Image (cartoon, rainbow, N blue to C red):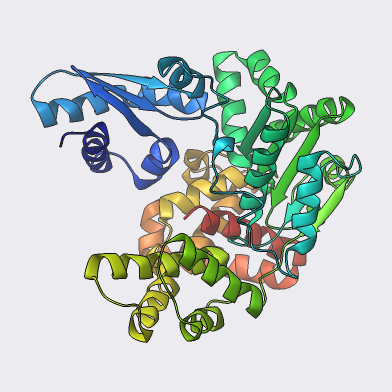
Length: 436
């Protein structure tokens, strides 16, 4: 255990035994160790609100873990992007996500399913069209929306090194707003987003149903749009299909250009396999490339996962890639989804968030109509997504199993009778699955 990364890995294992998996994912998923010197562990997380939460809620537990490891007292320091830049004596722009060659237009495989979105993204990055504002890219998970957004950022940064780029995910925008309200930093929050020259929001669907977030986003959008600043948004569905998104936001999202990305066709999938194989330094025959492309049809991310697995087999086992290793890799990817079931607590958290409630409110005794509906939806989703028994679900909510049975039956009836309600259930389920 010589490096800061090794120490941080051990600390995370300690935290995992004291915190829920949701807490670990929420607050530490992008947290990394910067340096370990003397009795100080320096950590970095990009979001300022996460930095504050880690310092206020978890610093004692982290120091406790360090003492357990070293039998000495330790301190921690948590840096956001600006703090890390200052610590390393470089500008935060130079350390930004938009200085990487991993996601560029040059390594984005273009086919009929994404050609239009790719061309629109280049036009936005080069500033060659004022009519594409906002650019709204939509499509299912794993098809390249985020890749295109990063590519826009990279090209824009190269063309305009002095201009400010802001990229954030929809749920992080909500979390930062909540933190700004709690700490009285509303002005700083608005300055951060309304001073952007290029404002990009991934997974914009996650702001739907959150009244105050939508209000803040509405004014941020207007300020940037009226100032002629470029806005790029990405979602898993077009604006009209985002349930509980305010009509005035739907209208604005459609002011510019909508560009969808579909699942890649066979030829594009083969090209992706070959490109990824070259990127990871392995040689795949045409037959193997074809086999992968025929069996993984709807998700570019899964294709990359298979190629990475093959590269690992080749490197670790010092063996040639053959049909059997390909078959094993594909089976691993296909069965990955059921292995990562959401926890009941996570489903409750996501359902509560969708209905603008806290998990405590949702599981409590309130008989307010909106709360009761959210509780019934959570019970239904836990039953559908985890397969837990009615008795086990009842225990989570401190209710009898007959209450759970009534709730699930009522939700199923509503799904059958109301297309709008069915879309709501689909939205919440998508939100849950996309974060696994």
